[in-house]
Image (cartoon, rainbow, N blue to C red):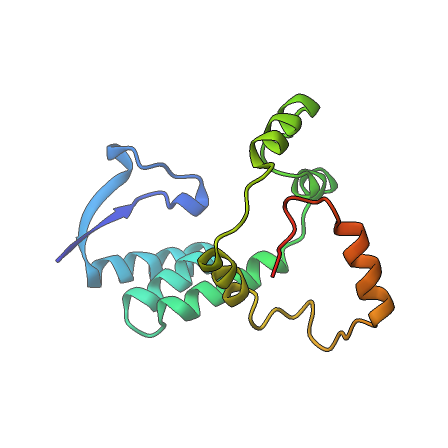
Length: 151
């Protein structure tokens, strides 16, 4: 079995351009990443070596990369970019169109069951008991809301 190895790894700014790829065996691929790790000390090469040599599972490598990513120091500019919501914002006109399209639609029992199953084990609502007064207030607040779940 042959692997495609990035001469300059993607984590170091390499691309998928054919001039940056070579075909190697799995053993050669592991050795190349070990050599890069010993030369440059980049943990991504260590994880690649450990995975390719069978000393670390994909799940363990993923867990390590997540830990590394979470602990990474970031500039204030990067932090600001990460805080911004992703995707386009709807204009008031498009929100009105979406609302109009949803009016009068009810969820099927199957859809309600799927939602119920997806919320099983939801940590946000565990241990919270609503008083009758609070339930009545919620019920009044939801009157006329077409999107509210009805039992």
